[in-house]
Length: 255
Image 1 (tube, rainbow, N blue to C red):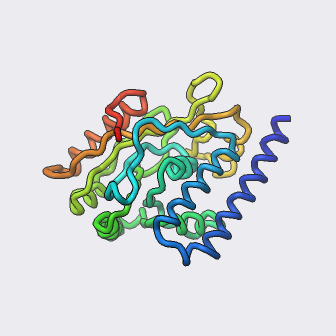
Image 2 (image 1 turned 120 degrees about the vertical axis):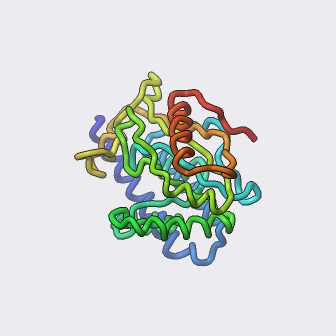
């Protein structure tokens, strides 16, 4: 029975992804940024429901346009992180350039406003920082995973500092956040969504679909002022903040 339930959710998820692809291809050009963001949030929340995952938000997500721009940073466990953070609040992600060319996923990613980086090219980080800085100055909310890759959820890898320069240059706050996936019934950590080492997108997706009902818990920390910051020291400090948030501590953001 578990196999057939997982298969049913998989087919439903594919149908929902195709619906998102269709909306992006046929309607997004006619919408302003606010309406696009609202579509992405609704789509992401529905995708979590289809996958059997309950979203739990602790603290206050980045505010809407009236709240101003922010650079959101978070730990990185899975492909599911992006859907989860979009469901909590639409942000523009920075992602590896290869995602742009993935069938279906590339269209969804580009439609949600993703900025792409060629990780193999060191100079490309400077280009992306420039575009991030412009976007932040224009009022966008941008999210990055400063670990640079996924971890298994048990450890927090060191943070790369380069992309923090965009927040310093644009003079906008950085808001730390932490993600966890837990078994809804027991509250114990679930590593079903992990996407690391030899894991494939399909194997990670199938584990997630086959797992007992999950909760995706997002804890948003308090935004931090960029003035007088050194990006390397700030990256170390933010690493400690995200670790504390992930463990259930840290300073939560408030209205």
